[in-house]
Length: 192
Image 1: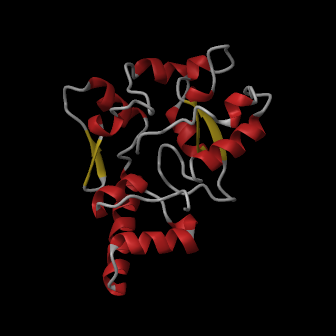
Image 2: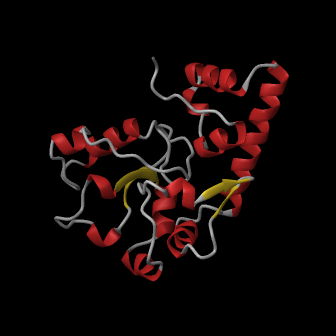
């Protein structure tokens, strides 16, 4: 998982969209802002994937305090496994996905996410969101290995490979944090 950024000029905010009245509009905008990538798993959100607006803090859902900063688009399975208010309360305190120091506190290393054992907020978030789920971790590692082989076979740089892949098949560019860490590159979502 990488740090999630929120656009202060998002149309969600400027249009005053509220959940659940504007669910469809919010979903579409979050999909665009997140580049069709699940906020938690960093896997591609395709047309056939069931997507849900995730309320990071479920105790805020349907309250006046709920809003854009609390909403992320995720795969439905991850939202269901994350659970509701009782599980949320059990895992407190948690680092927020938009925290400026998120990637300094939750480190990607060899396919898994780690943190300083003394960092309770980071440790609890890794467990709460199941960032090291066995299948998800295996998928992440296999994805990176397949990309590494493709780069070597084409005899180009990792940046060239991913720029080309993003240009031709953006749905095949995911696990962004793993890519950027493993290959020491930056994925450019905005075309110049």
